[in-house]
Length: 83
Image 1 (cartoon, rainbow, N blue to C red):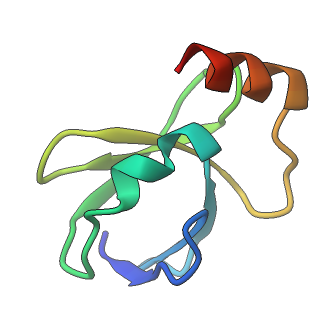
Image 2 (cartoon, rainbow, N blue to C red; image 1 turned 180 degrees about the vertical axis):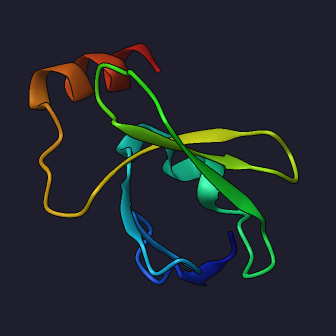
C-alpha cells in the first residue's frame, strides 16, 4: 500500500482508505516516508498496538491503532521511558 496522506505526524492514511494512529515512540521512523513508500499492514499482538506497518523499503516497523482508540497510557509511558 502507498501513503495517501501523512500531514499529521501521528496519523497516516493508506491507499486502501484506512487511517491509522502511529505509536508516539515510533514517529521518528516515519520521518523518511514518502508518497512512494510501500507499506504493508499486519496484525500484531503487542502491549500497545493492534497492528503494525512495515516499510518495505527499509524493513522498519511502526505500531499503529485505528483512529479514535486510546493508547494505554501506563504502557505508553513505560515504553517511552525505556526508549
